[in-house]
Image 1: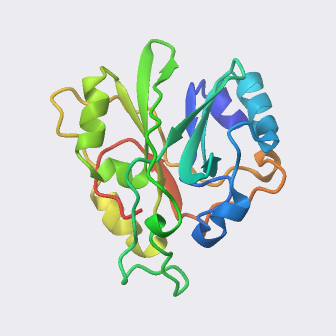
Image 2 (image 1 turned 90 degrees about the vertical axis):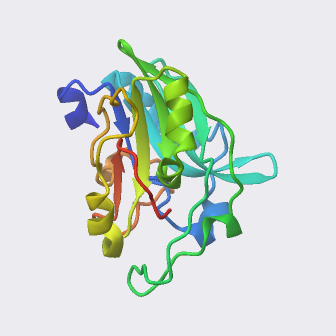
Length: 214
């Protein structure tokens, strides 16, 4: 985060479920509350670095469990995006011989969709499979946003295919690219009890629109 701040980054996007790792079967046990005290180190970091952070976690909202993305702003405010379109890896996609269960077996689709405001821009958030539904980025464009921020999880066996899908969106006005490929957060930035995301290189964030497996 501090390295990003030195580059005057305004928004930093971490991978899907970055605070716990892509541990679908452990999601309820590891889930965050909307006002979870484990977010305190990230709130402090967003404030000290003058940067908006978008970090992924399983989220409990009432009796529902969602794949969420916390939006933590420099003024220490927290908002929440919940993944609209749940995904599943194909049977041929494996990571260490294991295919994660379909997200719909554990999570429920969400409907929270706040915009992210920074500098002179406004961004919409997406989580992985959201980007594969044309209605999702189209809805963002219809809201007048200039940037589409996608928090992604891609396993090694599908990394090349997913990278090949990168390209411009079909909208007449291109998105401004603001998110970067993102590695795991440093150990000292993780809240207590949080875990790294999956295998090294398996998680990334990107802002182009393509079909995503999860």
